Length: 58
Image (tube, rainbow, N blue to C red; front, side, top):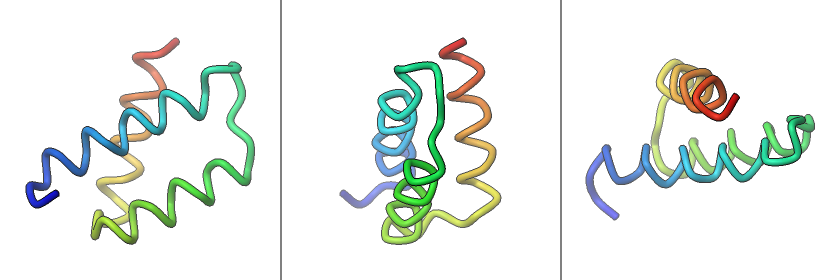
């Protein structure tokens, strides 16, 4: 997986799965943050993606 867009899309799908029960547990957020780090997605991009994805699910 090389492109930044592919990485963001993968992470966005994981965010959707993490909030499917209507809640975001601290461990889920930590896990997603670790994945973002591994994908070399910086904190600001991760936070923005998370907010946009989470709001789209609601």
